[in-house]
Length: 67
Image (cartoon, rainbow, N blue to C red; front, side, top):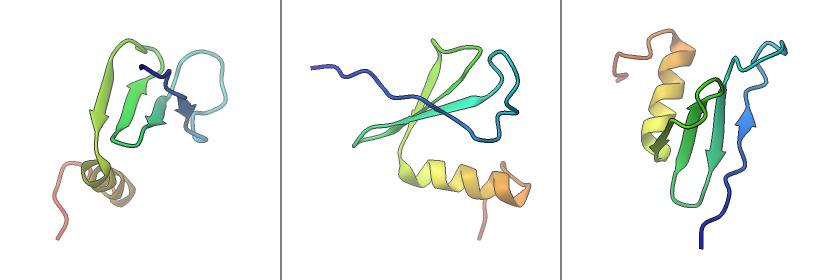
């Protein structure tokens, strides 16, 4: 049985009109990310890679591995 995902927008989306942010939906097995202006395309990942991406973005170096 397929369940609809509950998409949530970032609280930092700017609050403006239109589709201008990243959305996240979670299931027991994975996290789903999509850009709100392209909702038919989504990225599916698990906890560890998503945590690594978030740490990188917060540090200002999203593409460099951390020690």
